[in-house]
Amino acid sequence: MGEDLEVIQKAKKNIGTVALTSFMFQQASKPNPVDLLGSMFIIEGIGKRLAGYWGEMIKDQLNLKDNQVSFFTYHGVADENHFHNLEEALNHPEMNMEVAERIVKTAKITGKLYTMQLNELGNY
Image (tube, rainbow, N blue to C red; front, side, top):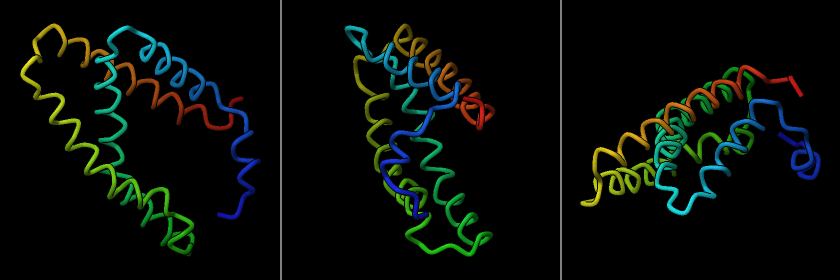
């Protein structure tokens, strides 16, 4: 939307973003971070199902150009492919109930933290 990239990259993260990011890095530091498939399910699922729709609504309501909502519209298309790859991983022959339960728990935590990130907009 025209903001300087350096300003965006150096912006403070709200407390929900800090919590979500910290959780993701903690999960990724595990020897076998397969649990993160749950996080991917939440994040890629939102992208696949909602990002393109949100982008079009924001563009229409604010009279924006395509390049001003490209983050949303890109994820609305690209996450379709990402989600397909995720489905393949979830259907891997080595999947079992123990692993599935860990993935579901991580998905639930990610969903809560994702919500917290949005609820904490403006809270730094």
